[in-house]
Amino acid sequence: MATIKASNQISLTDLTDAYSVILSSDSCTFVGNTTSVNSTQIMKVTVTAMRGADIVACTVGDMTYSTSGISATASTATSPVVTITASTSLKAAGTITIPVTITDADVTINKIFNFAIAFTGATGATGKGIKSTTVTYQVGTSGTTAPTGTWNDKVVATTAAGQYLWTKTVITYTDNSTTTTYAVAAHGATGAKGDTGAKGDTGATGKGIKSTATTYQLSTSGTTVPTGSWSSSVLAPTTSQFLWTRTITTYTDDTTSTAYSVGGKVGATGAKGSDAITMSITSSNGFVFKNTSVNTTLTAHVYQAGKELTSSTSPTLASVGTIKWYKDGGTTAVGTGQTLTVTSSDVTDNASYTAQLEA
Image 1 (tube, rainbow, N blue to C red):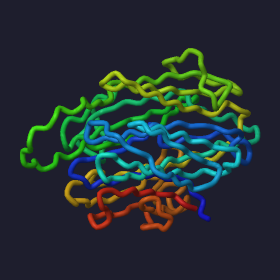
Image 2 (tube, one colour):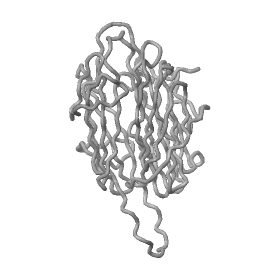
Image 3 (cartoon, rainbow, N blue to C red):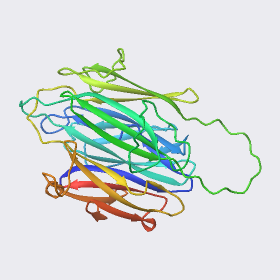
Image 4 (cartoon, helix red, strand yellow):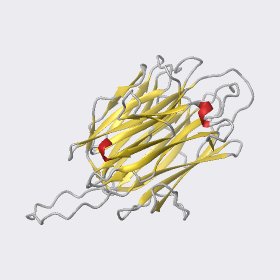
């Protein structure tokens, strides 16, 4: 079996009215001992379906897992909460495929949740941890080039087709080095105007996201949400402490939803490891298309210690592994190499593409 060093997944959608599905978190790392997860650990993820700027109801179908030792259940709310449980039999990183069906349309979008294990290493040279995380937002007119204007600490609404909401995440480590990553989502394209129909009854008022608030708290438990005071600043865990993050989303009708995530406790300093390898995917022509106009080239970018690997870097991209592409959670590669060309014949309504760096 090939060793997966890094992976990333994107969805291409071909609709008149654009639908999208957002996970409150699309990955997590469970705390492990030298061979497996060291105790039963739980992660909660909120699934939100959007039609343009409106939240719509959705359901989560039967989820599939790339390995044993991991399980998940979903609630039946308008925005379901998926509870992911990692047991002590989980011994390797993997993925969960979450099929999300939008209730008012015959559309199912497969979302991929990635998980990994932070194994315990022998005592060695002092490593570095995460000091702080800053998330900001900006609207741009390009789906491939990050905007250069002012970034905002609150979500900014896109107002027209052709606009893209960019998210920038800056992680500062304890040695004051930083890494910056970007994510982008497109505003739905406006469909053709239909004939005027009879006036219907006034529908219920829709709701959008009004604000989000993220706070932090330390705890000695990695499975039970703490009951103490939450801080607006990131807290530094000490030995045997877990860092909990609480995100409260307030909607325009003043209802709220709350999601929690937990970071691993501080343990003995492990042996100095290899630089982290991460991957991102860009699309030359965006991610949402109208009326079977799908025609784009997907490019997988591989980074080691924040530096993009190419044929001329040291190490080279080829020496680290081979990039393979998979469609809709399949196990047979549909392409090999750093790029993949996708046309209208490849996408019916929507399709998810995963790039994996395999060795």
